[in-house]
Image 1: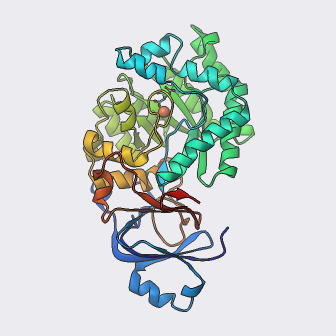
Image 2: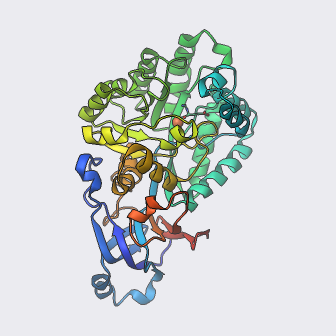
Image 3: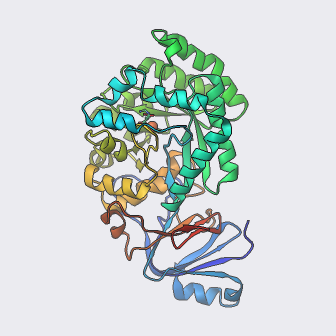
Amino acid sequence: MQKKPIFVQNANQIITLKGSSEKPLTKEQMNELHIIENSSLWLEDGKIQMVGPHDKLVEQYKDRLHEAEIIDSYGKIILPGLVDPHTHLVYAGSREGEFNMRLNGATYMEIMNNGGGIHATTSKTREACEDELFAQSFRRLNAFLLHGVTTVEAKSGYGLNWETEYKQLKVAKRLNEAHVIDIVSTFMGAHAVPADFKHLEDKFVDFVIEEMLPKVAEENLAEFNDVFCERGVFTPEQSRRILLAGKKYGLIPKLHADEIEPYEGAELAAEVGAISADHLLKASEKGMKAMADKGVIGVLLPGTAFFLMAESANGRKMIDLGVPVALSTDCNPGSSPTCSLPFIMNLACLKMGLTPAEAIVAATINAAHAINRGQEIGSIEIGKKADIVIMDVPNYMQLAYHYGMNHTDTVIKNGKVVVLGGQIQ
Ligand code: NIG
Ligand code: FE
């Protein structure tokens, strides 16, 4: 850890999101950013030590300013490091051929049912050695970092057998140690039914429950357990079995829910006490209300709808009904090959009716809560981890407004400057 303190001075705005560490923000709270104008930050020992008006901090630290690394943020804004709570980070290969097929009319599910899609990436990931997977995923982490992301959730699910699921989870652990970005792991053995279990779906579910889950828990390879609950993949009943079995091992349920067709995934997430239900393009109002009642976070992925040329989830309605909403890239080679969370924030405004303020909450503190890290990251408060991003825009509303552009100027991770002037240090 860096010994020297960092004084980040003179920002136009610091978006603190104060008071949000206990619970994700809902309804009108999602518009309350708790901004401090003309403000500065003192970071030391990997933690945020002080945040407030510039003059006040200068006075408080006047005897120690000469010790500090000074980062000037005049004309810019400061946010908590962005958090991506849903990615399929560790995979091999790419699927631009399928992109072309979809542009010519094929659907995502048709491609998958013909052995492509998740199955294609599964083959590539099975073939790749651990070091190859590590190298590919490391590059993606660099892309995340350059877009202001400091914590990423990563799912397995391109193995569909123990050997490769294990390989993916081990790579995620290695990446967590080797890369400055923090990685939080999710086991997703039930991402698709592999070819050797075709028409034996329940047997595969038994295999996930009896063979894979105990090993994941025993080796402490993941914190969360996710299932692709979708017609033609896993039914709500099969998903329930897997999620409840995971709970017995201490794995917190998550769910790919109601993505392509309405399938009562949102309802199931509320029933099993999932921390989040993700996608939700086709979620029913009943399901949304059940999520709001139980505090299940809706992790919305407007990049996936955009890339699959589908209608986005109704984020506006979810927020109005009281669902705590988070945003994510869903970074994966099939339905959302991007690492740009700022672009996702822009899409959330344009396609799901979120305000720029709600998009910031959804990509910081609510995203942190969606991976059980709300107490440590996601807001700029004394004692939290010094994960900070400086964006080169004069006010927060310009972030989502300039679409398809990267405003990330400086990233401080764990109290260390890791991106400066848009370059990895
Ligand atoms: O979240 N929908 C299921 N899983 C991923 C896509 C995985 C893939 O196509 O490789 C998703 O969209
Ligand atoms: Fe996904």
